[in-house]
View: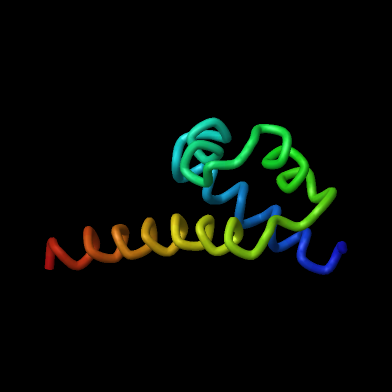
Length: 73
C-alpha cells in the first residue's frame, strides 16, 4: 500500500500546483474531494488512471515551458 504513496502524493501535489489548486485538480480528475485528500495525504496511493492523468498535467506543462523557451530563439 505504501510503495506508490510518496510518488503518487508528489505527482498529485505538482499537478495541483500547475492547475491552480486542489479544487481544480479534483475537477480535472473527476474525483471526490475525500478521495483526493486521502491520496494527497499519502494514506493510499491513487488509482493508476488518476495517477496517469496527473502525470499528463505535469508533462503538458513541461512541454509548454519548452515550447516557450525555444520559440524565442
